[in-house]
Length: 558
Image (cartoon, rainbow, N blue to C red; front, side, top):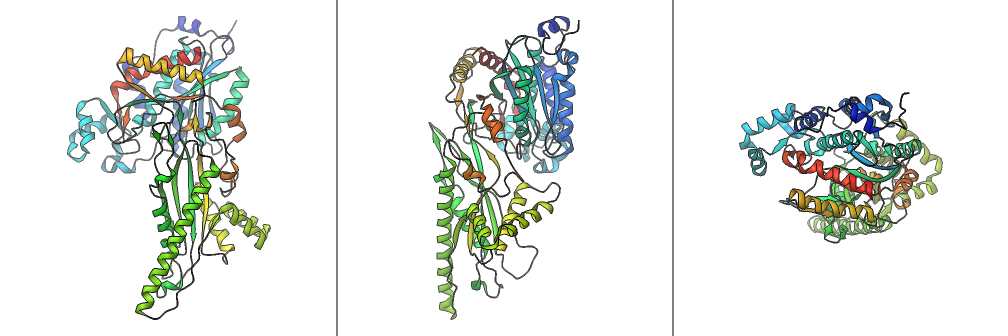
């Protein structure tokens, strides 16, 4: 009688097939390099192709040859793909999720070596022959022979390969429980893959009777400061919001600059208040979030003319640990009001100086600071709900294929402020996508027991001082699956994110149902998102697989 997927004995397959694919050094590195060669830049055709490659490659394992439906491709809303592969142990419900992402950032920064960015052996050779052009620390690593260069080597094709290695072990009965590999697209931009995977995980749990013990990610370690060579294991991940400040000034001719208020002046003051403002840093133990930094800043003037720009916008990266969103909004408003006061003072001072040179009557400048929610309410009250809804329809209907979500949101605010042209000058605080909740397993005894055991194992078996950090600092997809650390109203975010649920949304109900304990163990690398990105070979092929194996065992046991 043919075994079904639900009652297949992994051990029986192991007895029939003894050939291993990715357990040897040669097999593992062949897989890593093949994954790197799939130049899966976020949003590219290759990002879709690599999902098929991963699924097809997994189906060559004996277990999945007999049960190909255990490996599945799931489409996202924009027709990209998520891969799931489940190795079930007979009678087991306890399941560890192995999470990774297969997309990478673009390669424009590689310059003359752009054509080799996805060819790690060739790129490393070229770097060696042109080492006088590389930064000193990269040359030192390259000359050691212990590092592999190339886009995606550390972030995170190695993590994908190690996940596939662990899954192969799971199909051979190595673990006393189930292992589900989840490989997603789009981690580097909006995490659309992970967001799509949340309901998929709930569906798989119901379909196969799974209890998710933990989710283990394989993102690489990130240095906490320049020169940091410590090795880390993480039990959570930082959150992130993308606050924006939309500045509306008053247009004028360049021949009369004091007859208006240049939006570029306004947005520059906002940036001076926000950039590296340590008042936004949070601390947990000796872990501290980095201060905010600008990600975009520009005016919205179309084309060249001698009219001064009167609308401009700036977006900032802001990390979170436990600070409630209401408090975040309050701090941002306070910062915007401080910027507004400085703009007013700058205008008055310069206008007075000019008046001393030439008799003139400067404007009486007062800048109002509003949240997007307040602007929207004002627009509806004074111009009617229908007018606001028409603007929304126009923005959505004229959205171009592939148009960035942030650009769509900003277009909506632009048109809304044009409707309310009488209300100005103003600074409008809003949030743009994406949103990453901060997550942590700090209250999960099983995870901390496993981490303590793994740290001891790393020290005793590998001589490695592995340090535990509560928050992974590089942002990752664990944010959508783990226990959130900030107890606050999501309305503080969604109410101030234009076109929420039309341009961007999160499966908040499904996320609340999951809340799976999380952990991150990954490779050692350097210079993520830089042209000198590289992976430490010895750690990836030695301690890393054994530490991940040991962690899976402990998580299933606990």
